[in-house]
Length: 128
Image (cartoon, rainbow, N blue to C red; front, top):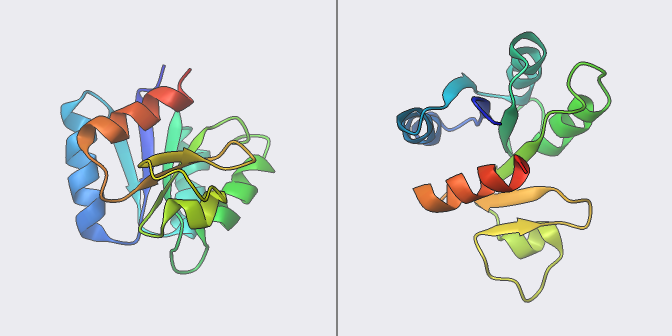
């Protein structure tokens, strides 16, 4: 069950809104503002889930996810990618217009403009 979430995004407004949304639903939310800080916090805090921006300074979200998967302390932590990019651009799906999508590797992507319900649905998907 997901209770502790690490939220990694370089946009403070996005972090503040998502953190508040998740905390009102009972989640313990830890924040980081770039991939470097996010990786350090993932190792220190051992969250149940990481919500990770795709495009960030210092370390891109995909690079951070690769680092997480290659580390024995963090390889098991599921990741939801957060983006403003069109999801079908990232997932390769030309026909899927939904807010939550998976790519061929099983990664979950969600739009930053998602609703609270869509965010919770994505969290539920990775916690199954």
